[in-house]
Image (tube, rainbow, N blue to C red; front, side):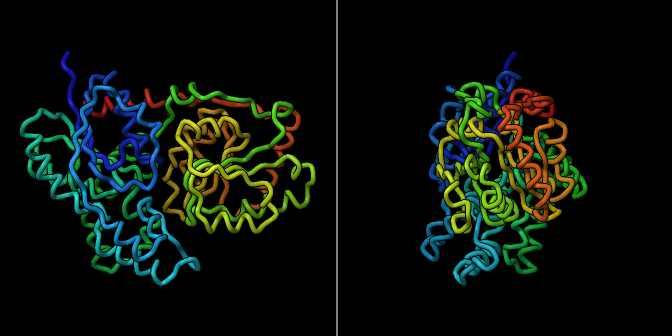
Length: 433
């Protein structure tokens, strides 16, 4: 039987690092098993905030990759203010950390580049892909955002080819994402963002969401929305040498944060609790390590280093995805953080699934009744807290520490098969038809 073709329009593709590349890289890896042949359309000269050459091994050998050039204004923004490098990863200074240059840059980013700074790739891509679609049989087109400019490509192609099946994949929400309110938008700019988002929801044949709450919100906004979460790849987990980090087998009780940590998701109450624990409990202080593997905001690190935690920090900096999986496995507690406001309860950070695959206990921070909390409960893999919790956080950490000392901090992997990349790709194939 001849395989059908799916054109995946994505900004992030290896050697891009970070969470944005994982979703469609893994779908592309497993789609052929379900009768779909993926074709990738991606920029020839992107400005990636992170690089990870190790992800190239997951790119299928014979996959067709189509590239065109993109122009991005980030070089101009970085000349205005070096901290604008964060924009490429959707990060920026907030509150008291904002300089006038940061405020100006944020205003320009939100009001001049709608929906985002990759908007200059939209028209050239529509023109190029219009010809490509005329010359090649494609059964389904997928656009993956952010950057949400890519959905503008899908919108343009759908207008030219009304019978083309278009799936708009939202790895994160658009106007409902936490940092949207920090963009200093004018009323007209806000209206334009919302009009474009609405057009995508109402025009795409299917809108994919990565969380249960986002799918429900998208449906309320007029989208034909389906939830397919992110997940973990069994081949990633099995390829990492796992050391048992319990009791007598390890001298350190390690709490690890793996990934990018920006100011908007900074669990200040956790740092305060840990600071108290190392001051009050000598036994805990003798064994405790706070490990970071990834890009942590300088101001967050500076704050922690000015506390009693200074001598307990192990900061590995940005490491490859393979190494990151190893560091997860060689930890006792794994930290995950989300934006604190209620509108973010539907965000499920992608790394939670790789955390689950390790069997390690997870401590999570974010709004109440979050989708993350639902997953932790279903898999009995940890606990979710608000950013106001302190005593409950301290009790949880001490409980896990005491179990670790006795060698009883057991690993758990119940009910996680639903989140494997293979099973999620089968679910996607059913939706593709």
